[in-house]
Every structure is written in C-alpha cells, then in structure tokens.
Length: 193
Image (cartoon, rainbow, N blue to C red; front, side, top):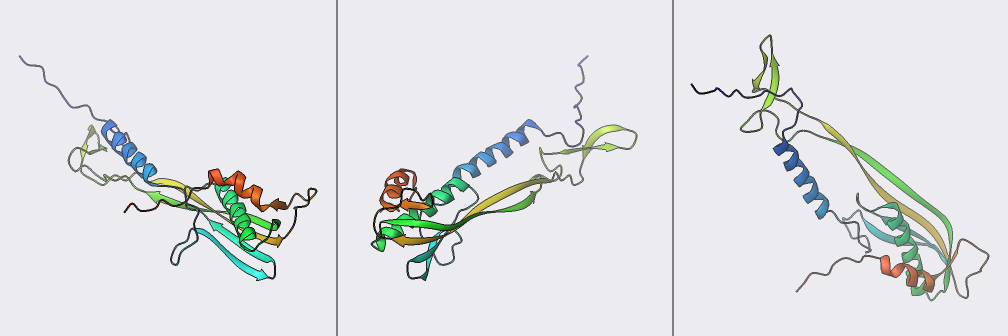
C-alpha cells in the first residue's frame, strides 16, 4: 500500500520562499538602476540638479536638488562646489556663505503584494469555517508602506576678490573648494558614440 502525501497548509500571511526571493531580486534590480543625482545644471522639465540666480551685484542664490538616492552630504558638497565654480567664473577668489538651508522632503508610498490571490503557484491560504486551513481563491493583499526622502539645498553667497579671511568660518577659498571637493563630484555619464 502506498503512503498518501497531503499538502501542508500554511497560515494566511506566510510568504513562500519563491515569492520572497522574487521580491528580493526585484528590489536589488531596482536599487542597481537608481543612481544619485549627478552634478549638472537643472534642465527644463527636470526637478534635479543645480541652478543659480543673481540677486544683486555680488550676491547669488544657489540651489541643488537631489533625487531619492542622493544623500544630504552630497547635496551640501554640490552646493559648495557650485558656489566655488560661480565665484571663479565671475573672476572672484572667495565666497561667503551668508545663509544656507537643507530641506528634506519625505513622501510615503504604499505598495501591495504583486500576487494578490491564488492564481497559479502563488496561492493564498485562508481559514475555512470549521475545516482548518485550505487553498483559497480570494484576494489577499499585503500592503507595505515605505518612505522616500529627497534633499534640496539653498545657499545665498557673496562673491569677493582677494584672499579669504582666516577668521570667518563662513568664508571659503574657491580654488581650495574646487581642489578638495572635485574628486567626489560625480558628473553625468557621456553617451558613447
């Protein structure tokens, strides 16, 4: 006589290893595609990159907006780097950071289990009245809420000629800023042609 093998029922909400592996692989793939905002001017229709506006004579406002994978430190570095570039472009030697603000914009998203129900191998298990656990064909959503933050920075600067004052912590030598931050600045990749 042959032994009968009965399927083992799992309680509602338990994820199958295949489903967990598929979701994990999808997250790794998405993370590999996402890159921090490159150091570049903000283009028409784009919400990321740097921009500047002359407010008066030697006073400018610099803005840098990053995407969801650009961290706060990068936004600050890119604002300083742009301030130094702008100083040199205007034949200055140093700039004074008069005012600076870094804002974090956090948005919350809710996603649902991509396999809502038992269609094919992704079945949902649900409790039947009085009969234990069995295979069900209803909808079974597993909402997941996550946060995504973006940083954007604003700085008002004054441009000056001559050596930066040593006793002013808000004063920066433009050439030294370019030299020291240059290695961490990531520029956009040029298309191969």
